[in-house]
Length: 374
Image 1 (cartoon, helix red, strand yellow):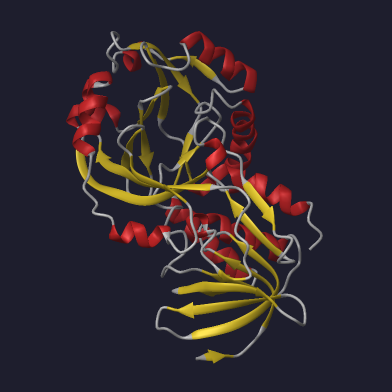
Image 2: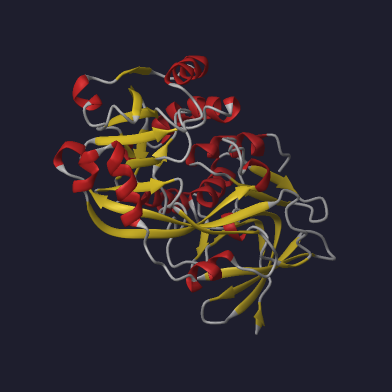
């Protein structure tokens, strides 16, 4: 049944890192007092914020998109400053350029790094010896970090409580509509089936893969979205790789990164990490698709291929896989660009949709919010 109709200054839908950071920003920086954060799971930062590579990018990953690379280069030191306890930097990060099928050469990669102002230096001999020289043109040591999503979740819980943000877990926003008397009406449904209609001046849609799954007056995003079901393999690395991260570029290659939340490493492969993809459409819930998907790991194929480039990886021990929905803008699916989506919906005054593909994109979102007259 429908119960109550409390008034809120802002409702943030989606309790991942972006949703939590936006709610905290609204309370601390914009002075909003009555803020409600709604999350469909039973804890914060438990979906895409957790089930990912846990990389704090410094631009190296995007040699074909100067803007994306430069923004990461600018944002990394800010992230390290703002979340120092969640950043892992006690490992060596290596980028290797493949001899064949790479979209950049080692010389081009070095020039690109210098252009964005990112630190790069030749790897020492012991690290170069990890790679098969017949397949790898050159190896570089760079400055890039990993983050611990569990520590970010702890930060979020503390800050939200300090800002007096109300948090509703196990709750979905089902519909967003315009109120005749002004503002927005949001239909919430708890996991026990209880429904409640609440009103708000502003709504921030930070649901990542669920951006367009609202009934009512919600118009959908103007930007097209593409969803993928992806697999991150969690691996226990052999001794000589426990304090190392590796990315082989640039094309159909792979990455191996520390995963601080579990004390393991993720292993991802451009060819085998994406399992299934489809264009976004209303009524096809991406998270429902993930629940129904038969999660057969491709880790054997990953290891077989990466072991050709880094033989020591053949001695890694597979623990389990993290399956999640990854969402990207259709216009960027064929290049390195990872801009944010930040849409202000004209037909729903006060309603915004936000999507970022990397954790450091949060600064791009907050800078956009700084320009809004809230």
